[in-house]
Length: 305
Image (cartoon, rainbow, N blue to C red; front, side):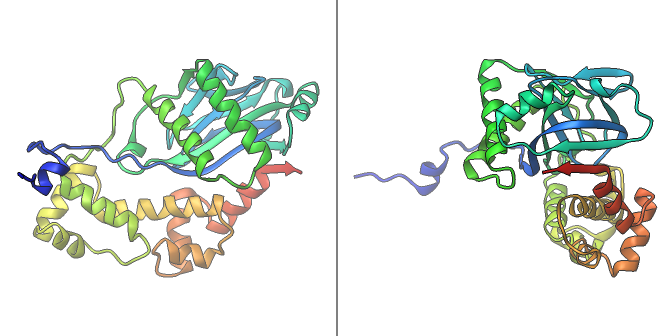
């Protein structure tokens, strides 16, 4: 009896496939009622996906105003400045986000009569190079199938607002991937086709809390330090240390938004020498000290239970 080799059983093709790695990291998926949504120049290092059954809330980007609605999704890439407003609020000078946590559909319809707007929002990252996509805000029409998927996600967010289990994570991830497929002529900025650069980027992401040197990274891919530095800069249009610092600040922003870690803990988890060094770099990049940034985020978003 003739037996097959393990390689043939695994993959009978000889040609190597280059397969893009897509990793969806969901930061939050929430459904609530908005009473105020007046914001200017929002821009963060993560993707945003929006939906609304009732409408009445608007996203504004480059003088283009799009209303959230039942038959569409709104997708906004990282670092895309945009503004928002509620139709019912008219002209409000000060920025403000206020909303109510709700538990059932009847509350939605009651609050709509008072000028509230329902909103599903999902924040997520895809990692390099997908988070570098250069794209405008996407207005994505959805058919009956995806309307039902969104409805199921919204109902689950009402029932389990503080938990996203495995099954629901799959649904949210599926919705994200569907939205991403709708981006026309995807243009990825600074795309690195060299496997060595992708290996280094993966290492940086997984070891951002460590002291990472050019010498360490160049040894990893068997290149002289100077040759590696040139290859990295040619691929990403920035030095390795500039990239590492950018990733550390992005991680810090996510921690300040989505965790209760103390500033010292965030400093350590993001690979800074100490809190003073972290605060100095963070303020240089964002214009605010980490504590003030967190205070701003908490004050701007007012949620009633």
